[in-house]
Length: 438
Image (cartoon, rainbow, N blue to C red; front, top):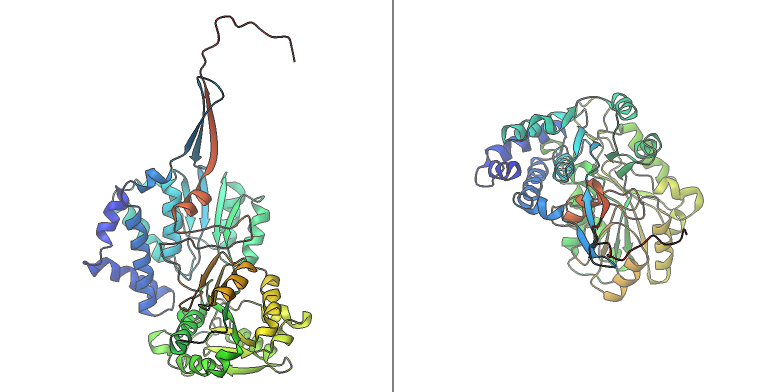
C-alpha cells in the first residue's frame, strides 16, 4: 500500500515532486538536469512495477510432493533480517531506492547509508516514505562517513551487507564481513564496433552519451572503445570528438568529477599518451573559466588512442584498463585478423559489469557474446553500455558476490535466501514396529 501511495505522488501528470527530486539530485551530484530528471523517472517506473501485489508474488516459493502420503517439501524465499546497504553518490536516488525497496519487500530490516556527499536526496525519500504510510521503525537511515559505517558493520549483527561503489572498498568489505556481502562495484566497460557499418551518426552519438554523460561518472560508462577499421574509415572517431565538444559546464553536460582531481586525470592521460603510437585523440585539457576547488576534477571530455598491440602488452595493459571515474576513455582499432586478440583482452579485464556489441551481424554477435562474460551486455546497432532502467537486470557477472538491481530475480537473489521446510505428518502404519538399529 505504501508503494502504491508513492506512485501516486511521483506521477508524471503532477510534476511537482518529480521536479523536486530532480533538483535535489542536480544540486548534490553535478550532472545535467535531464540526467537528474531521468533518474527520478526510472525510480518512479520501478515503483509502479511494485505498487500492487507483485511484492507478494515475488516472495512466492515452491512445493514438491514427498515420497509417501503426508510428506511434502516447501521452498521459501526467506528474509535475512537485519541487513545493511551502502550506496553511491552518482545515482543518489535510483540506486538507494531500488535496493532499499527490494530489501523491505522481502521482509528485511535495512540500515542504509547514502553517500555523505549526496545524502540529502535519500533523506528526502525516506521522509516521503514515512509521509506515505511506512512505519518509521521499518528502516534505519544513517548519515556518516566510511570509517563510522565500517565500525557499525563490525559491531552490529548484520546478516548481509549490500555495497555499490568502488572495487577497493568492496574488496575491503568482503574481508570485514567474512564474505556476507553482495557487491555491484567498478566496471571497466567496453564497447566493440563490429565490421558492419551503418547509421554512423547514431552510433557516434551513443558513444558520446555512454562515455561522457554525467561527466563519465557511471559504473556503466564506456571506458574503452574497440573500433573495427571499417568504422575508423567511416569517420566515427571524428564524429565522437565533435559531439563531445558540444558539452559545456554551464548546463553540467560536463562538470566536476567527484573522485579524481584534475591532476590525477591529466597525469593518467599523459601516461597513456606516452605509449608508442598512442596520442590524445581529443580533450586532455583542464576546463576553462571555472572556480571549482582543486579536490575535484575539471577536464574536457577526453579520449586517448592506444594501438591494440601496445594496449595488450603486459607493461601497458593495467594502465590502459584502469577505470577513471570521469570523462575519459581509451580508443583503439582492430580488424578481422586480430579480433581474437581483442577477445583475449576482454577476458583479461578484472570487472565485468556492462558491455556493448555494436553489430547486426549474427555471426559476429555470436562470436563476441560467446567469448565474453559481462553481466549486462547490449548487442545490436543500438547497443549501449549505460542505462539501467527498471525493466531488465543490471549487475555484474563472473563474481559469486555480484548484486543485481531492478528485477524480480535481482530482488530475490540479493535480499532473500532459500529455506526448505518439510512437512511429514504421517500417518504411521498401524502395524509399524521399530526396526533393528542401523
